[in-house]
Length: 104
Figure 1 (cartoon, one colour):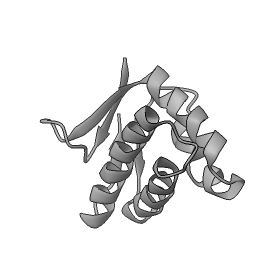
Figure 2 (figure 1 turned 45 degrees about the vertical axis):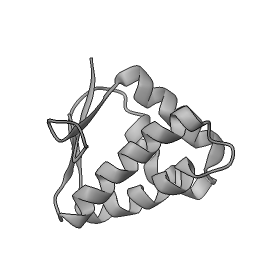
Figure 3 (figure 1 turned 60 degrees about the horizontal axis):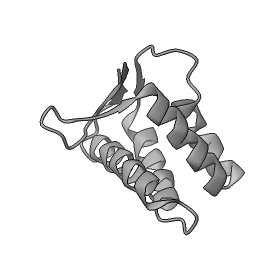
Figure 4 (figure 1 turned 135 degrees about the horizontal axis):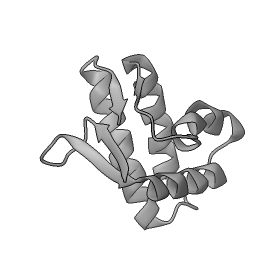
């Protein structure tokens, strides 16, 4: 089981990651981001359930910026940075298209 995140780059237009991977990404992000940046995105990674949710386009744009900053951080391991960059790109595509960013 896992997340199917809209506006991704696979054949279905999604980013697909397991719940465990997304949780672990959150842990990596928490280690490199400032407290203020982490607060802006923590709700994506600290989910208590796998219930679908939607992020408005403007918020997706802000999230993309934070994720890009984290992916480029000198302390972010390269393999985690790749996954974080994919999420940043998906969030940015949703914002640019003025469409909700869906996690299901």
